[in-house]
Image 1 (cartoon, rainbow, N blue to C red):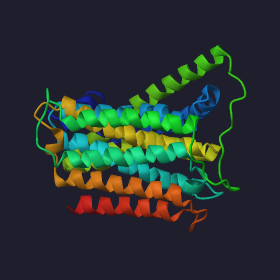
Image 2: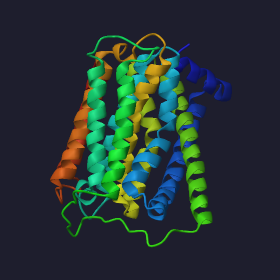
Image 3: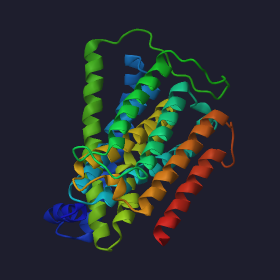
Length: 354
């Protein structure tokens, strides 16, 4: 039984196959994610300041990984139950959706384009790491179909590259070798004055983790509810994975990015999206581990390959936006953000029409 069957069985045990109740569960889970997303952003911003790690690191490592848990569970379950297309579609569809969310966050920031205001060496390094990881994943499908203990060598490389990327990002924050040109719109993080009391720091970490669990569980319930609804329409596995499960499990990133921008934590918003995307690439490695019928990279269709390359192009556009640093765009959105929106919408059109 595949993941779609598993999702239907879970939801049927609660709502008995009712479309109305499925929609109710969907809305409640979505509202929970929205509320927790706003709250967790405040805690993450305080942790970035209190620990001295910086918004880019906290956004990339902690926010990015914590809010991706529900999507990870979806991909691993699909791979384990023999649905590689759903597993990969969920991963790469989430990366594309989350990158698009930055364009929405750009609209929410009125002072200047987000790519200009949030440019930092840490975010640029993280963007370069994301492009590298996506390129390696694309390369995997053109290598020999071999596995070691059920794992393709590229999956091991992705893990190693991800860890190296975290080290490079941390070094870029602690000892930057490059600084963006300061303008009136450039956002600077507040510097830690003194170490906060241990009890306060422990409380922040506890609240952050509890909220992360709530977001992850709500995201999983949201994904299951969407699968139950989609099951009634008979849509394809690739379409379900790319649009429905990927988008619903990525909602925390959208809420967090917009909430962070509203609070002025611009580096945190960008770091959350880019860091979450680099973590999502690891969905492919872990799904390959759980997929027991060979290399998962060779079990996907051109549909998944298309979205993998599309995600790579969108990541490159985002990185170029941070390098180019256009101050003001049209209708409060920069050229790069508009291009990312068009790329995503174009991908949806290709997916639906294929």
